[in-house]
Image (cartoon, rainbow, N blue to C red; front, side):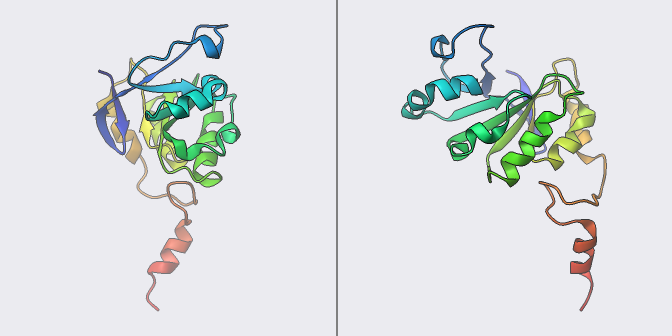
Length: 173
């Protein structure tokens, strides 16, 4: 079973990412048993069926798909994946931040695709809390990437106050 980093620990991954064949209609895709991260197209095409199925739901967004399509449904998902098709494509950082800050999503946001250890710290700042690294990367070494910096200056999804506000709050009255 593959392993992921989740909440700053290495754990077994119970979810499988469903990637339909090119040109396959979302209605025709056979859904496997177990925990499945579905592409957005399948969620949109089969929403009623999936809700009626009474199993934990997971969906993933490709880098060219925004979270707006999930706006009214974010609370239905145990996991929302954001895909990084290549490490130079940063659009999924924005999707993660929007999920946390605009849509109030509290569940797991998982980075998928070309995920490298030197990106983990920045992904966490955007609200991502689980990471499926590329198969050729050492997950144990990557875990340290979450702690590259000891302090942050700016506010972000993982720290809602900038450093100067945190310091003011610690000053004696």
